[in-house]
Length: 202
Image (cartoon, rainbow, N blue to C red; front, side):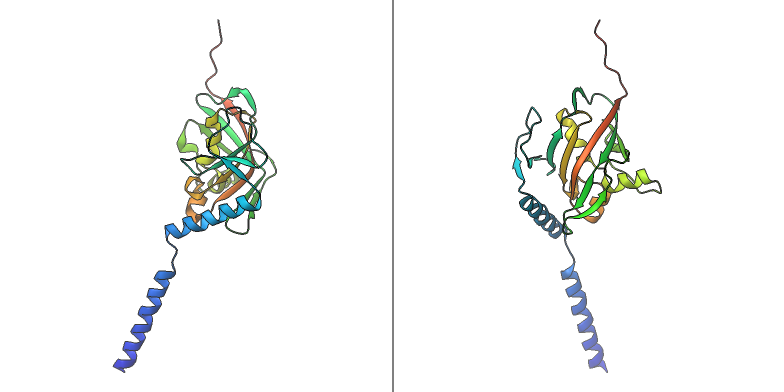
């Protein structure tokens, strides 16, 4: 009987050891993400550049890789460059399609610009992510709004600007950071209202 119990404990110990070895580490998740992003870049013949173009002009399928965040940015339309974000600005954000780059590039969401479902206040980082609640807007923000979505505006883009983004989970939304998933935003559009009006010339 003791021998049988000992054998059982050995098997339980081995099972626990194998299950511990099988768990993904943070480094494993980063490697998986890197492979997913690289596959997407290769499949779509995307090229990257290390400097942001002052005129906001990008070649077809060309993205700027931000060295601090790992976010890939492509400006589709710089918007009204006479109206860049200044001071505290309420920004309304809409999207076309968002893909999960780990799961065969599956579509996570497709809104096709049907109303502005996300909003943040530029200059107030606490508004750059969302919490999960019952409302549709809050859910959208929890899943998709992130500091990475705000990042292109720091380049001086104007009202109605359109961008495309590849966002690693570390720079992503609350949901991305929870599930370790990189997202591709096919098109984001910004619409904003300046709270602090510009001074008029005398």
